[in-house]
Image 1 (cartoon, rainbow, N blue to C red):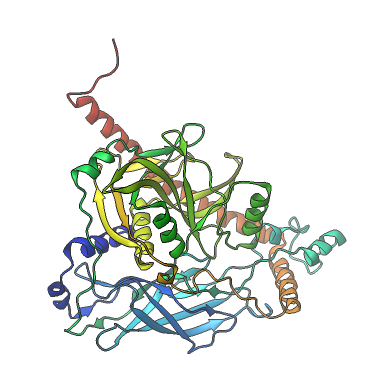
Image 2 (cartoon, helix red, strand yellow):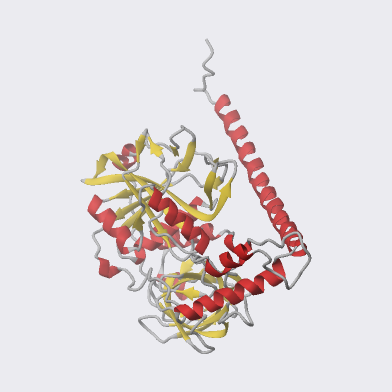
Length: 500
């Protein structure tokens, strides 16, 4: 089951099926159970030691029989098991950090002992293997790979060109190699052992279900399924509708830690390029223009954290209709998972997550944690295709539903303090400069030669082939579904070919 499917099952259970009797029937959480945690205190490889406490709260509860066991925002604790910092780069080029989560502390009852490890770091630049968080290699960047020795065998004579030596010493943009997990970092946790549950767990509060009545369904009948680019190509899927005032809408996303994107300009382009080179985030990065019914979005919002590649973003349009006196807003929500320089598209493009249902639930989750959700409902669109393609050739999977979120007024105090803080600097300026030079020379000793270049080229080629095969597979599904839908339309009684 995909992560999006699991999130949807949890949400539907909250909205429709949550029952204290069901939860009470569960006496343990099995090994392998997955749930999401948001850190509420910073953890860094530069300062952490084995035994350093780790604090957070539940974004998504572990589930028993598809029913959440704990309320969201339930505190969870853990410790650092092991850590390797980069330091000056004499021993390690990359940092690593292993965290074990050991206790969930409900507001009522005794704390529950667990054994959980990190499976995914969702909104940061780090990767996870076998429960260990691995940091980036700071020289694995375009500016870090520049060398005059690529055609030679390994050699200690690295810099015959004095201009190259000067560049290596003076180039100012150098990604921080340490791991900085700031408050607001989301991690998926996997239980490594079964956890025993008490028999007197209280009922889990649920998000009230929004009734999609005839008036609301009628108001959304003419809502388009897709947005378009300025050239008229189909782009994102219109998949969320908000009910609430503009003030409530803006406050909800501000409380949840989202930002308004800036318009494209020379300054923002340079800032985005800096973010790409430094492997850092750009919370207000511009978003490309998309149209709905020929109109530009009224609001463009994004949630980015510690990576230039990853962000959730929304384009929101005001609708003419109201419902129960509340303005309605249509939006297209997408999660970006990578950024590359595309020759075909003459610039940077973002790769997107194909699971749109997952993005819908992530937005519900963020707004609910912020205390800004009144109720949630679904409006099915059975005629919508379940696999669609955007303007840059990326594919989306969707069940076709519209997530309808009724907002309520909320204050900035509802959010979690500290989320979105900038990572602290490691040591003094002189310390960071010395680390930069040591890591640069160390990398060039091993990688500024033709042997490593051939190896790296082979590795990247294999990755590209695998990615192409995966895209080809979903493309085949897309074409098969499109052909099936076209055949069904031709067989329907109301079909007309348009021929005279």
